[in-house]
Length: 370
Image (cartoon, rainbow, N blue to C red; front, side, top):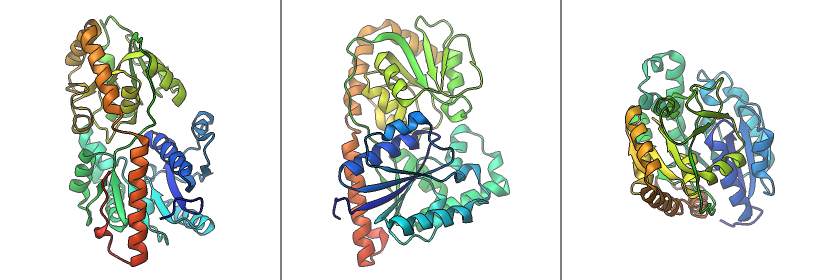
């Protein structure tokens, strides 16, 4: 595959969570390598501060107002979405389709297509132990569509082995998936940190499990700040910052000595990676993804035990030697998850897809190492 401006990628995204950060970083890096990248949004349009994340890149942003798949489990918007997206393929004639959600993989694409699984409703519900509603007909339709998407993709990707194994167990796809860790551009961090505990997460998302942090916060010597959308501050023991621009969160991470993620469910956790790269000591929930990515560079706590979280944070606030050790270990580990490595892995995947597509070889013969 030629990495020249003539190589074209049509990539879908949404603006609700970490997929936007991932898409902007990867799309910009692909464009810097010479690819022509069209980034197509679904769901809410990008806010002004989100658009800033693409400033200076050669990424073409296309906004569609199409429904997000988890907001439309019955597929009522499906035919409309197919018409718009396939018309974009006809217009831009991409060499590769890169999808960051499931349902679009069931469309009749002409170019080879890779599907990246960032999360799914079923794995979310299992991790949150809230599965009764999955028996509703609309969510059964969603499940069937996700399974069909995985089978129709020429290749499917997960950002961690733990999440890959969950997807494989739930949907039993016909082909083996590929694991490509997410990555960010490395940055330095402030040598002098503030006595501050920081977290980020949507209060309405049970998977983020922010409630356990608000329960653990009373009595801590250090202030606890939480960034993320919420209708009201859930506790007087924390400072709720509301939804912040990505750049503002980066600034908070530079200053915070400790970053906390008590998540019940996290297929990767870009905010944790950004915190580690900023030199924060990590206190994470003891879930398979975080163990896979951060063993040896974080403290792990039962995400259902607010008292254990309180003790861990209190001890870390008081122990400067352990805190500095964890800050250095987290930063060093973060360098493993570089954007250059991630982009190279996707380029190799694209090359394999195109070779297979041109030779009409089965997708099962594609092998990629991140």
